[in-house]
Length: 191
Length: 87
Image 1 (spheres, chains in turn brown, orange):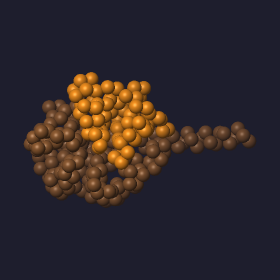
Image 2: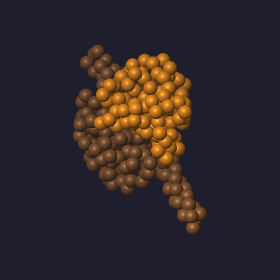
Image 3: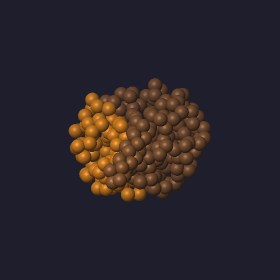
Image 4: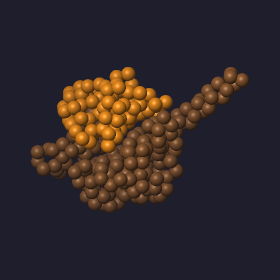
């Protein structure tokens, strides 16, 4: 009887871990949402959530206007609880106002759905940046309602992550960091 | 940016919201930390490789998470010095 009980427990753990492994294959990004006590994981196959610090995961059933499921980047609004922006290979930029349960398009002005980085200016959260693959760096000044091209971005175009960092440039702005296939680049955002 | 392998892909990047000069990059080689806005880097949690992502709790910046490419999650309560496997 004891052996049977152990076998059942072992099988349950094995199946649970297999399910996690299937869901968490090809991880792109993590985001902590302290207001909802949730850890979000963006993957090649959608968005997962954990409510126990990453021990167990379940796939989120997403609502709204999503062109795809490949979440490459997520960033939370530093002042508005529940507001999250995301971008991905087939997503463009999308915005959630309820912690990532439902999403709306926020890609007006972007030339492609293939977005590898999204970041928000911590000193001016209405300003966002996005990295559009093959098209360069884009900026929005109005909460992602409209995007405009800035420039070609870092010399290595394989950008994997974009981050607006509150470090003064000494020229009235802050720095934008880009993680790439050839190291980390930074640029003053006063372009 | 001293100490940062420039020939390797950076998969994740995060900044401490209370002190933005403290930043981390997640790479296949592991996790690297800078305390001088990226001028120099050193490895932390050196036993963990193949990292895909790194995150920080904006309310409690000492609480951090990393994920391996295949979805193994690790948590740190001391700003990345020690890590615990969550699975």
